Image (cartoon, rainbow, N blue to C red; front, side, top):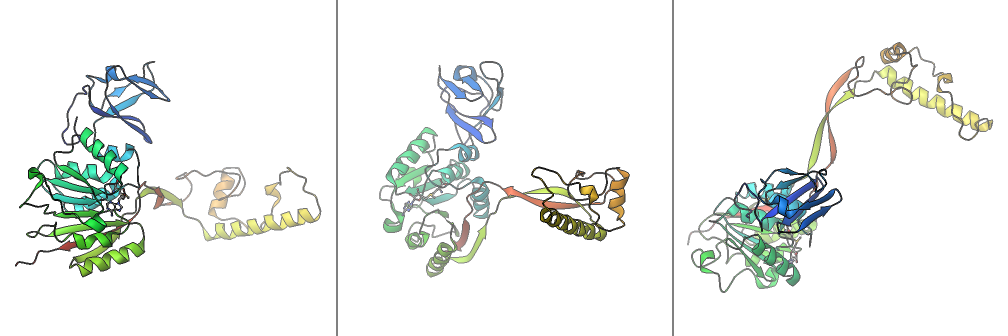
Length: 362
Ligand code: SAM
């Protein structure tokens, strides 16, 4: 089982993501004689052994289909146990490409938190890269360490229990296969901390002295960005830029082109209904629950083109409101194509402050 390499067939001990619905993805470790229980039914682990990753599986009663998916950091981000706020893929993928994290990159990350971004970094830097991740909250450190071990990620990822703001990033006993020129030598830094500006001065001794180093600080408040930018400037970081990744779903829609006459008529219609209501109330003629007869309302207009279209439909006039329901794109009306913003895509919107440091030749 590996987040690093794809394989075809599910074996005992493998991590599988049971895709139950878009909002419910369960990571399970295949264990003989165990079951996955869901609201749609139960699924025997024994039956999963030998199936192909990506295959669909029916519940024990023959219905309630789920998919068995291969581990990826992106799936882990969607299903991991939350111990903190996490970085979602919309942000991590942007940061990764902007800082040019590739196989072989040496990354420094703090804090580890729920290890969401840790998984993405570990996969992307691959076997030849290294990830140094730091967490000062002991239970979170222990949980993340256990997960990294279970997910076979310790070959390129070293987690350290440390307060980086007070004690910095330097390590006394770096395992030999994690050293580069005898030290950490980070190419890329990612700080998701409440006060990154206190950690920034500690970076100088652990970053590469021979190549350009990139940093990204992830902060939810603009006041934090302000302090971070100041610390970056003080420490000689350049090309400082702040961006926000705002996830939006855009939909292509048709919008009815309305005639000015229709709009005027609509306003008159509203006013006349309002007047009629006031009049009715004054004369106490409207009994509770009784419906008004809209057709009696005379707004005093000869009617526009869309008015006539409605009359042709034999339903009386009401181009925008009650009565006739016009469906988007219906024949007989003029439409223009527009784009509309739908609800936000799930992400923990923070400000991303990027900067670079170029080593000065000695
Ligand atoms: N990026 C992580 C993820 O994607 O799962 C989430 C990080 S979480 C928002 C911030 C973490 O930083 C917390 O777990 C917190 O304990 C840790 N932290 C805060 N101050 C720290 C410090 N001075 N040194 C090390 N870790 C720290």
